[in-house]
Length: 308
Image (cartoon, rainbow, N blue to C red; front, side):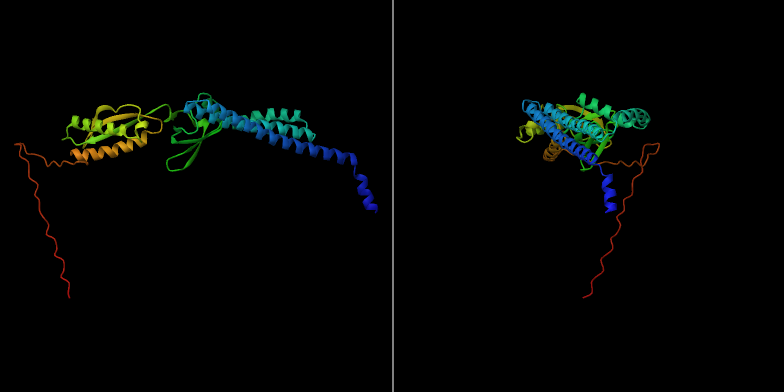
């Protein structure tokens, strides 16, 4: 009993009450912060959807979706910081020394976090200038793929093989966006040197007209086939270049379908799509005569007779 009495003597009902009150307030701050994050993020999402319904431009809708994700992320960060400061205040921790120390430490940490700050500044201007949006196909930092997420810190890409790449915004110096307004599907076609170039152009235009009349591919093509002409004389072929003006991200599908149909048309017209050729030159004498190549047929060995 004496030991129990000494223990109870150390207990201060007032202190226990203050501790319980502080714990209750901390729990209340956490609950309110979670509710605030959920409500604000939902409000941003509803506002973005309402604005998107009034937009006729798909490009503007994609930009609104990207900005909506960034604003929801910022709301979560700001509310979390405010809640953390209130919790420290309830626990009796003075914020003034912490903020003062944070200023000193921040200078030291700032030198080591320059790349992180650069990422955030670069991400801010990427979003402000509308360079990249979710759903675009871009090439950044030597990596090409579909944009799945854009934040102030990084851009998440998924390439053709399905691999996911996280590119810090600070590494982005040049953006090649393949999904803005329209695209050009550039196609190089090789024909044999013996073929008539004008005939090949005629077949190419005819196949292009058939492709534009197709109900599946016609809406994807925005203009007539643009035949640039003879691009170059290659080792075994005359290379002809043409291009389609197509809807964004349709350049690859249109190109594949056009080449498939053009192969059939060339086969029907007898236009050769050449293989690599090799000319063997044996040299010539001063009088202009050239040695002949001896051709010898090797005898084939007879198959051994089977014994019955």
